[in-house]
Length: 259
Length: 345
Ligand SMILES: Cc1cc2nc3c(=O)[nH]c(=O)nc-3n(C[C@H](O)[C@H](O)[C@H](O)COP(=O)(O)OP(=O)(O)OC[C@H]3O[C@@H](n4cnc5c(N)ncnc54)[C@H](O)[C@@H]3O)c2cc1C
Ligand SMILES: Nc1ncnc2c1ncn2[C@@H]1O[C@H](COP(=O)(O)O)[C@@H](O)[C@H]1O
Image (cartoon, rainbow over all chains, first blue to last red; front, side, top):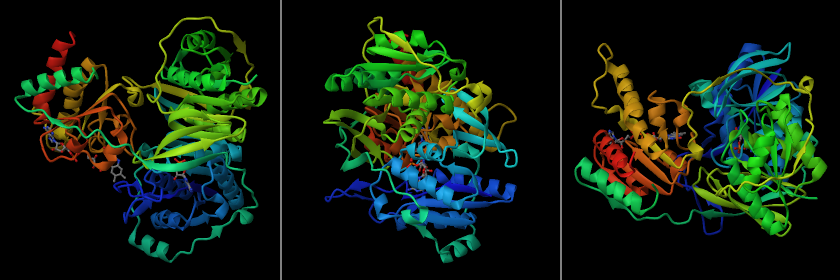
C-alpha cells in the first residue's frame, strides 16, 4: 500500500520575481525550494505510511528543476520519488496536469491516499488538486487540518475540515485525495543522513507513453506574463504627538475617501 | 438556449454577499455575449435566495432545495453542477473564488473536460473565448490567460468585481432534481463546530493587522503569569482590546503577520501573507509589522496602506501611503478615539 503526495519546486518565498524583457518569469539567482505548503503533506504522508506499514511516494510533474523538491522530500524521509515529464506538458493547463497526475497514481497501482498541500505559492491554482481527484474518480477532502483516523482495511477515513465558518468532522470512503492545511502537523527537517541519501538517489522520469495516456488539448493557456503596474509611490510621513498623528491621519483618510 | 451560469454560495440558507460580485461579472459577460445570466442556488432556502439573485441582476435561476444539499458537500454539489452543464451547455460558469467555489468549479470543469480560469482579477469576452488576468508568484507577477471551448469555468477573486445595487424584481425559477441520492454520497458530515467571531479577511473592506510588535503592550500581565506566557498574554490582550476596537469602529477585520500567529498571539485564520490569506481591502493598517516580502505578498494590492511602526527604517514604510512612526500602543487608542469622534460612533 502506498500513500502518494504531489509536490513541486517553487522560487524561495523571499525571491524577487519579475518578468524580463523577453517576457519570461525570472527570480535571478534566488534558490528554489519545495513548495512551502507541501511540507505539511509530505510530513503527513511519512507519518501515515509508517502507521499503516506502507510506503510514502512523492511525485512531481514538471521539468528537471522539480527534482529539487523531490530530493527535499526524500531527505525528509519519503520512500520513493518519481518525476513525470514530457514536452507535451510544457505550458499545458490544469486538465492536462490532472490527466497526467491521475495516470501516475494508476501507474503506482496500490495507492489508497493522495495528499496535496493547500496550493502552490507560484501558480496558485489549487484546481489541480480537485481535477486530479475527479479524474481518479476518488473522494475529495479539502482544507483538512487533521486526519482523525484511517482504516485501510475497511477503506474509511475520518478528518477535520476547516471552513470559513468553522470546523467539520467528516467521514468518507477510501481511496481519497486530501489537501492539508498547516495546522495538521509540524514538518520535520531533513536529517543529515537523509540529505546524503537523497543526493545519491536517481529519480525515475516517466513520459506520457510510460503512463499510457495522451493529453486532452489545453483549452486554457497563459498568453503573457507581465510585471505589476507601478505602485502609487506617494508617501506621507505623519508626525507629532499620538493625538496629532491620529487627527491628521483621519483627515487624510477622509480626503482619500477610504472611510 | 445558452447562458452564463453563476453559482450563488450559501451558508445556512443565506447567500454569501460576495456572490453578488459574481452576478455582476456574469452580467458584464452576458451583455457582451448577448446571453442571459442564470443563478444556480443549491440547498436550503434556495427559492428565496434565487429571488435575491434576481435583485442583483440574474435573469433567471435554477434551484435545487434537497436534503442532500443542506450543508455544502463537494460530491452532491459537483454532481449536480456537472449534470446541469452537460444538459444545458452554458457558455461560462462563474463563482467567487472562496474555498467552496474553487473546489466546486474545478471539479465540475474536470468532469466536463472544460477550461478553467481560477481566481481571476478581471474577465472579458474575447471572440469565442474568455480572457482574464491572474496574480501569480504570490502576487509578484500577473499573467494574461485565454480560455476557449464549450463551457469555461471561472472563479473570481473577491472584491475584484463590484456588485450592483439591488433592485427587487421577480425572476423565473426552474427547479432541478439532485444528481445523487444520499446512498450514493460517500462523505458524511459527523459534526460541525461553528467558529465564534469568524473573520472573513478576503471580503473585508478594512483590515487592521498586528505583528510581533503587539507584544510590547504596556499593560501588566495578571499576577502569576510571567516570562513567555506574560508576553503572549500581553500580545493577545493587545489584539483583543487595542486592535479589535479600532477594527470595530472601521467596520473591518483583524489580520496578523505570521510572526504573531506562530508566537500564539492570534489564531492562524487571521494570517495575511504568502502562507496565509491574500487580501485587497480599501484600507490596510499594519501595526507593529516590519513588512517582510512574504507579508507583502498577501496585502500589496490593498488600495491605501497605513504603516504604524516605531522603527522608521522598517520596510513596511516603503509600501505605505501614510506612515506613522511611533508606539502603536499610544497611536492606536488615539486613532480609535479620533475615529469615534469623527465618524460619530
Ligand atoms: C516560507 C515562508 C512563508 C512565510 N509566510 C508569511 C506569511 O504568510 N505572512 C507573514 O506575515 N509572514 C510570513 N513569513 C514570515 C516573514 O518572513 C516575517 O518573518 C514575518 O512577516 C515578520 O512578522 P512581523 O513583521 O510581525 O515581525 P518582525 O519582523 O519582528 O517585526 C516587528 C515590527 O514591530 C515593530 N514594533 C515593535 N514594537 C512596536 C511598538 N510598540 N509599536 C510599533 N511598532 C513596534 C518593530 O519595529 C518591527 O518592525 C514567511 C516566511 C517564510 C520563510
Ligand atoms: N507540476 C506539479 N507537480 C507536482 N505537484 C504539483 C505540481 N503543480 C502543483 N502541484 C501541487 O499541487 C498542489 C496545488 O498546487 P497549485 O494547483 O499549483 O496551486 C500543491 O500541493 C502543489 O505542490
